[in-house]
Length: 309
Image (cartoon, rainbow, N blue to C red):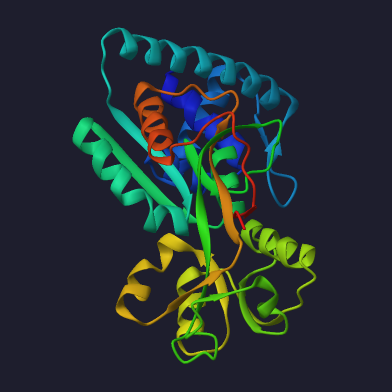
């Protein structure tokens, strides 16, 4: 047996998907099936039960999977240690990121990283928050980048900073000429929001609830670009990450409204599996991301920071 056979099977068991295991390992689905048969022939047991709609591991398959995870962990740890000893920073870092961070904030960091470590290949997938978590848990991504991380026993959470959320409107909106408005002025306004199952939406709703503000939620979208377009045509106000609207504000297509005495921030974090062995390249990337975020580990994130009167 080769270590590649073990990895393909481990990814298959974790993702419960032949196509996903194939994609992770850069092979075809038929190759995954062949490696699975090779594993079963070697151990002379059946590892998958196909009697249900979605396959699951047999008792023997579970036993093999648990042992293989330990073998892969030791192998990955050895590989990482040897790279550290030789000061070698290479390989591939697979990242799953929420759109706002991956598209609008990550490019500058990746550019700097690749200048410093040209032997590393960075792959980025742009996903919803829930899919970022799934990608990491199912081995599709080494690292996940998201906002408002939720603690779980399976994930390690590494805060790396926070970004500002800003209130935007169309230049034609009645509030567009206001230099500064109190948050209470939003009561009863038409509002474009992220879909309710997204953490950023829930955090914003909690802020309004704390301030006893009721909005007229007329549209919900899971795509930041769609939200911006809806605001541009004056369908309503929206609160979005500042980095995602810098260009539109500079071009005059959107107006940023300043909320008096308050600033809305959201915490950002890197996630990875607790049992996952980080390569030198992954550790270097995490360090660079943390440096860019300028995060003080002794400071707790808050979603609503009151400014001095």
